[in-house]
Image (cartoon, rainbow, N blue to C red; front, top):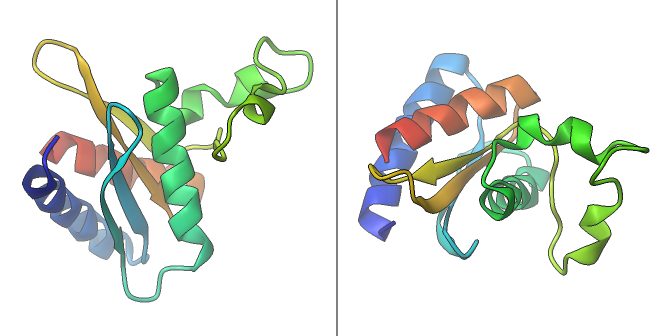
Length: 131
């Protein structure tokens, strides 16, 4: 995961955002959950910055799309309360997707915030596809 590849992939996300007519914040992290690139589009909600970072971090930590994890953190579910064990906030709502290389090795994740969860996921997938 390089800054150059992340920046190019973010452009693909911005193109998808333009198609949807929504301003998003797009975050790309490496396999350790560390920030590689972040883009807050003009007009994106201020809260979308933290949301996109939390979604990317959650996706890389669990190596799964955040929308697939939502049920696991509900009361009575296997991971209920797990978010209290982490220093940085996690987000179990659509908009975070893991990124793997050609060998299937986890190399990072994308997090998107600013739209409805399904829109966030759609933009995250566009970014991932470009990485």
